[in-house]
Length: 194
Image (cartoon, rainbow, N blue to C red; front, side):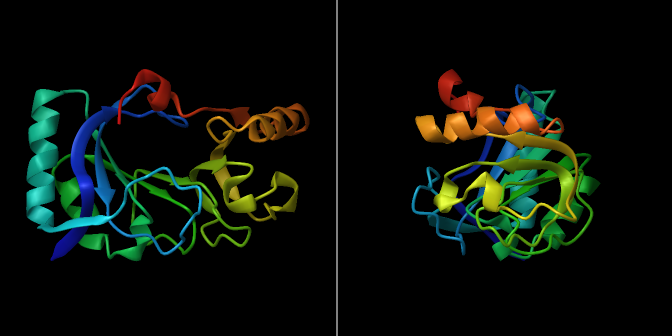
């Protein structure tokens, strides 16, 4: 089975967002995205089809060089556009803790160590996970227009769009009146890491 990777492919970095901000991890950047955000800042263009075995081998090599990299963060584009069941299982078998970052456009399949949902539309389908990250202004989303009923997340964040003052103001107002949300940022951008 093969997985479509973006140009960045498999790489070691420091997580810059959410609960694991500051944690060393291996990222697997997948190609393709069915969501199509006009303000997307990620290059998820198709680069190569790679076997699951080769992806896991690269993850193991990166872990061997960076002993703290026990997490593998699967991201995109939109990762759920591809069948990730084989990759997920292979990562668990190799001793990793597989994490998935999704826009929530569809239900997530399988057992993941961590599911991070950042809704890109108001009618997101994945309503449970480890963390929910709301980004006001993304695709024109307003925090007040999001239906958050029936959501179940251990951690909840609001994250301003980089360089967008209105988005920051919306986040600051949100945390004043929503005790279960914390402000977070895209720290990796200020650190200069991928």
